[in-house]
Image (cartoon, rainbow, N blue to C red):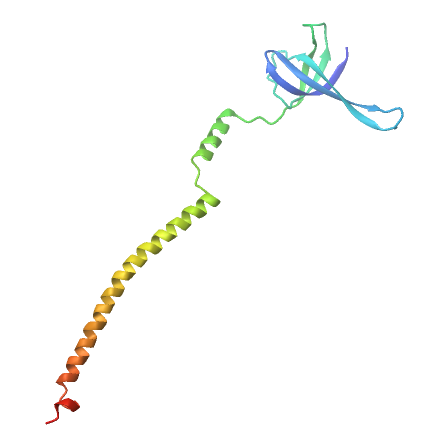
Amino acid sequence: MRTKKGVITSAKMTSTVSVAVHRLVFHPVYKKRYRKSKKFLCDSNGMDLYEGDKVLIEECKPMSKNKHFKVIEIIKAAPRVSDIKEDKDIEKVIHREKTGADAEAKAKKKSEETKKSKNEEGLGDSSQELGKDAAKEEKVTTEENDNPESPTTNP
């Protein structure tokens, strides 16, 4: 029986997978090797197979019009992503802290609001300071008037 090594390209059918087998062919005129591929429909034998798995397939009696091979073993399994981890990652992405341009815009808006509030408070303080300065000036003028040595009060 013929055996071939290939990569699973589709595992969407029930108990059937599509396996791509690559081989190198020598060109007679250009004297170069090039890659040829062929897809085979294979029976999965109840194995848990996914796209990207490297498998060994073996020829068998025809199971259907196009299915003449069955998977014997998994040579190398493709990395699997568990659905639970994927769901957690999606939740993290949805409810993440904003970064980049969104965060910069938010920080800029916040800083503008704080500047506004400080300016409003600053205006109130400056008007009070102006009032204090005016009161000090009044005291200075009254003290000058009370001073007996001032030139206007000479008898």
